[in-house]
Image: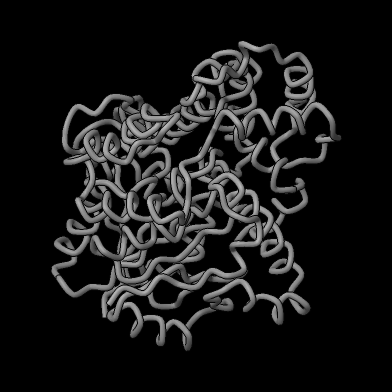
Length: 427
């Protein structure tokens, strides 16, 4: 049985995601291969709440080609790319059944990415180069790309480093490869790198049927105020599989969730930041806590305007070269969910959370139940009897439930809604 693991956010599930699933099956030459994505929960890698709850995105995926959908815990999904990648790859490998892992890239030179992944990113020389670039005032992603380039050249590696390292997709791909090198030492897992099709990862305007998730979310936020489902359907038809769009709009129509009010969320973040001690919050190092606290204490009416649904005004005011927007958003999400810096010492997910499955996936889950290296849970209550004997599991689970309570509040539901959740089953 071929089982293809995919790391994704499906925020929301669009045509590019469908292409990734179909292409992965084509490459392994097995149309019946099990596809098992692990997706972000309520908060994404960038640090903001997803456009719709994980269960809705899981249903989208299951109706568009996936067989089993797993959830990546908050501490790993809302994290820098290296932690995000290692957490996701670890969760897939811990199922004990994954034979292949597929992900998208924005470069044709996949061999260069493989060579770069062979570097030791924890080496003292690399970290000296990285810290040297950071001290010049450039952003962490820029500093990391320059440090990787310098280290690669010193090792005699040749290639177009600028092209290979300029895209968030390729940076994530590099971190996936590095995680696989660390976790799959016997190279048992086949790696499938699929060239991204259509618009760029962060392209804000849809220029093709393979629109980016960023442009799709922008089209949704453009209807803010009413979030008219007819307007959203009109804007997104052709950019998402019809069934994926239908699942999202149906869930919204039936009251499963309301589209997030990012303005209200950020205002709550600023209020909490200005009134509480946030120094021990995850990602608040390098005096970011002091910067956010000062910023939050000087909020003016035009800092987060009512109509700033894309948070562009807020972002233009809070962003600096020293602190990237993603880092700020991840720090704010950690503050709101109560993630302190000590939790970052837990390097890998201590359990597997099943969000949904179909009939083929159900068979796969039976095998996972026998092969998994960590506990498999299908509902939150499953963790209650496990946490007493596993401190890491207890910390990650409690954090997940706080993040879920915050997420459901943002989606207009009761904060205890996650305790009622059960896996999505598609027949």
